[in-house]
Image (cartoon, rainbow, N blue to C red; front, side, top):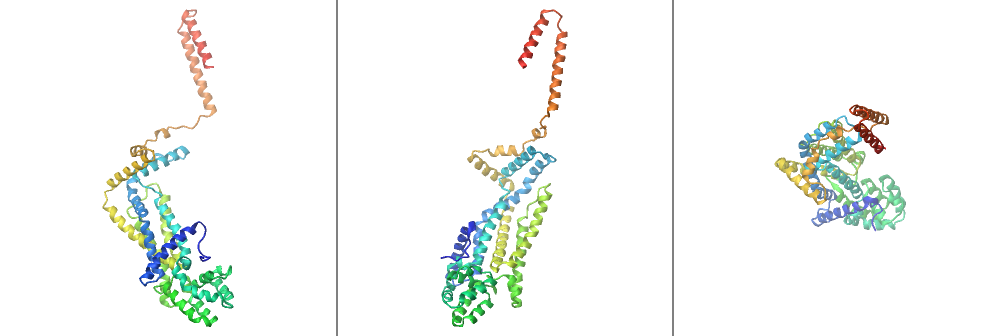
Length: 421
């Protein structure tokens, strides 16, 4: 039976998979006698980002390709400058996409990577907040104590009251071994002391459980299940407060470095001041958001946040070094060849057609006119009718009155008039 706090909804399966990975890593650490959850989170982060390495490489390759694409992208923007009609905007978008296709890059690559990070971050939060629900070795630490509390008089009321202050509300719904474990995992040092004083007959097993889980949760003196904000509020030692403050500070700093390095070698296209301004704002705001989140979330989340930025920075540095040695023209040729095979496999256009379409002239769009109004159409028809009448008069003047040619012309005019009707 799983803990009640195990993540549900569409993120539930993702959290379960992450839990399996975390459990496997922790089992490996137990096997080498280093049962530390903080270290497990670090190794877990490395594994996840190694799996995401292909996406990171694509994102950096796109950044490197941007300066090469800019002249063509700018040319397209210049052609449609000032045109706000739907046809022009649609055509501009099509030509822009053709340029991206020609260079074999996907501008949405960074968005995909961000989406994957978010799909990992939220389920991971549930895993770290409720480690015993996903890592059996950690749950086992609490089983003996939870079993005794389950049969101890007054334990239900005491734990339910404590749960309100530590945000472990599942125990208020049902008093079971699992909800007791859920509550105990969120205990602070003062809670463990109070529990031993309330139930002195269980003091030995309480002390044993606190020591074991404390060792598992301890990372550089910090309890990974606690938040930096709580550590500061609890008036811990100076060194613990400094360590707690360093968590959000390092989260912001590593995030900023990672973003700056990922943008190295890329330039924003001209004419995209608004987009460039938005990106600059996001790059400045994200580190601040990281600091806030890591101040209010468990230290375990801060470890993941910092480590993820460090791993991304290292990956990006090596990728940039590799791309610096690559001939961009050769890389472009390879991208176009790959895209050609991809499009032909799908039954679409070839790379040659993509290149031609990317550089297509838009004179046909520029020369497009708005549909004629009824008045303009009437004037045009009237003018055409006047021209026909003038031609008829002119033709009539060319024939001698009463001649056979004049009569033949009259018959021809009559037939032509009735044919048009």
